[in-house]
Amino acid sequence: MPAVVIVGAQWGDEGKGKATDLLGSRVDYVVKFNGGNNAGHTVVIDGETYALHLLPSGILSPGCTPVIGNGVVIDLSVLFEEIEGLDARGIDTSKLVVSANAHVIPDYNRTMDKVTERFLGSRKIGTTGRGIGPTYADKMNRRGIRVQDLFDEKILTQKVEGALELKNQILSKIYNRRAVTVEEVVEDLLGYADRLRPMVADTGLLLHEALGRGETVLLEAGQATLLDVDHGTYPFVTSSSATTGGACTGSGIAPTEITRVIGIVKAYATRVGEGPFPTELFDDDGERLRKNGGEFGTTTGRPRRCGWYDAPIARYAARVNGVTDFVLTKLDVLTGWDRIPVCVAYEVDGERVDEMPMTQTDFHHAKPVYEYFDGWQEDISDCRSFDDLPVQAQAYVSALEKMSGARISAIGVGPGREQTVVVHDLL
Image 1 (cartoon, rainbow, N blue to C red):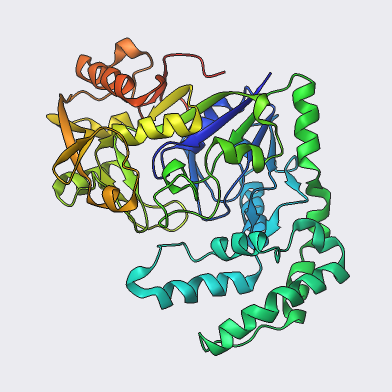
Image 2: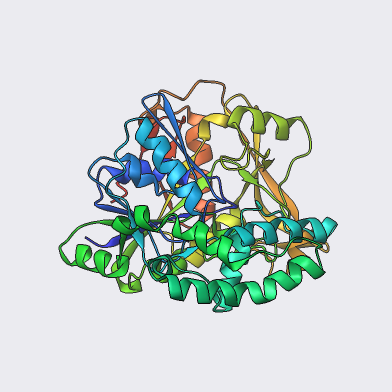
């Protein structure tokens, strides 16, 4: 079987965790390939809610091997807190595998993240303050610390010394913070080494061999397309590659192994943090979407910005990722509206633009051009086939499919694992 990628097709929080969990029982490996504990997934199983921040959603599927790939940055304290939390609830976490090449988040990068955001003031990016960006910056500057470094104290010490040489200058002379000692950082990281060692593997080789045996590998993105560092609404983006291309670099799987890409879109749109959001609502409809959809961050608890569905964004995500199938989530949240607007294009400087504008300036000034669709009043949470949906809901989904660039193969009608209408098989 080939590798399958699941990516967010908006600004994150689309419900990727539920989609991954839906397929988890049918795949052999689920790989998180980017991001860190700055992105959370919420999965509801038999009425039990599980909030995952760093672990792959596949950890909730018995028989599936969850993998943290080389493209992830790992906060080791969060990793073991999550493991302990799941163990306490009877979830088997013993099959977790961690890439030796994944980077770890040292405490000084959490400090750097927070003080930098405060220093930026009105120009802040809206990070979660968890050290994600500084750790990716260290990776690109070749001053990062990898998981494998924890098993060689001499190398670890040398790398921490190299990183702190500059960071302590910044912390003490610019931000008026205490300088960090090499010894305290090394001691903290070495404290995780023995517990981490049994989990660590050459995950690129592991996955290559699994595909060779005909097993199925599911690659799960953190964040989303419009937060991708290259293809998102830069600079209001995450620090990693959250698109299909990132699935290859963040896992070690070759592009030729991937034959299906599943894009996750909400039936409306949300984003957190700063940055442009053409369909954002500041009225009662926005509050209603937030309340009905439970739109508060899994990791941060921050209220999400809410708006209507943006078809140009979906088409852009389909193009960038090579989406073969969309999963449309949270359709049930739209129950009760008489009319539902959908953004089909933008107006920029008085002209209609049908695709995502090329420049940040144009996208910042883009005004949505809406088409309106009849809403429905019926509860759809028990629907299990497309024909079960009210005719207005069917028409809404069909319209989104035509304007979004790929077929809609599954529809979420509630938070539960079973509350999904499957239109086409996703594997």
